[in-house]
Image 1 (cartoon, rainbow, N blue to C red):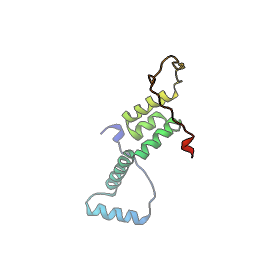
Image 2: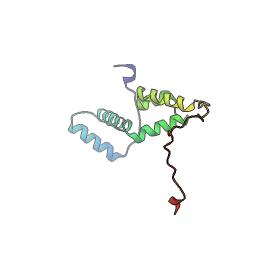
Image 3: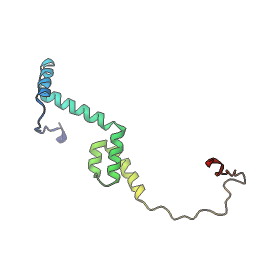
Image 4: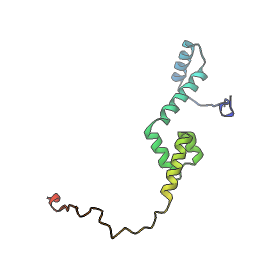
Length: 121
């Protein structure tokens, strides 16, 4: 077992009916309440982390400096976190100050003009 797998005691309150149901399920499967809770939490975290909405929320909060990189790594994994770090750095870069070319006809003389006044009618 690695250091991150070491058990940590957690105390929380739950409605009594949920604890009663949990205990009944634990008895049915001949296991204990803690094992069921840990498995339920693990599945919830995996399902949440796989959600596109969740990943978008993490990215938005990271880009807005509301989440640190290490937290992002815990939430979405190292590979996705690194991708977000690179994208954030790219977004923060100043755009290159390049003048548009004025001597190149990109349409090679075949440009079509559209009268937008007709579309408003």
